[in-house]
Length: 319
Image (cartoon, rainbow, N blue to C red):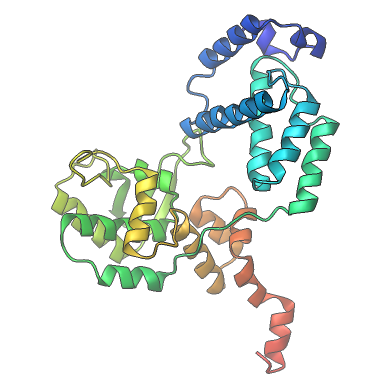
């Protein structure tokens, strides 16, 4: 790693870099960071910075890197009117990522950008759109309508495993047959890597007996080897290849309801755990969350029924 990139350079020094020098630093950063970030992270940074660059070109700003805090603050103000706060915040993080790549100070902590982000959050709030929760009763209805064809066996196994394990779509499509196992303590699925486990420490998630039976029926019918992808495409064009996260959404929408997304089984299980009185910490553990903040957000509507006001109303015979 060169000293130019290993340390944060003074603003005046970085601003004086030629375009060719910036390109060389970015190329060196790409080489030395190979394998350090997930493909999703790299795609997000590339997409977000393209959006920023295009906006700057349309509005007379120099995109950089390095970018001026004033340009990024103006970009935040403009995007706040059309994008969710979480999306705009991610844009700023991606812009900062490129600044660090060339050894420049990030612009996110600067006062102009901090104030623009604060304006956005005060005006728009910080609530994020949440996937519709898919409940177990809806899954049972879908399962009851499926037969014994290969594609139906696959979709039944996918729906069941997704709900039990609270797996993200990216985790589901990365599974191999051997990751679902039955031992002395019952069935589990091994999630080798996840959004919150980029370094691959791995985690085991619960699999109910009926779900394990559906997975086993699919594996046997499709004659899949233990090292093969667990969920494969049945289309003529991609037969035998891993399905994609987008395919997961399509399967949910085709089998259950068009209003569901790939995150709906994860949210649905979390909500139903909370309704069953299961503590947020146990919900977080079952879904591979690092902390309790996200499952608490998913289940906050259900949690209202456990509040002091709800308990008082029940004790008074009013609920």
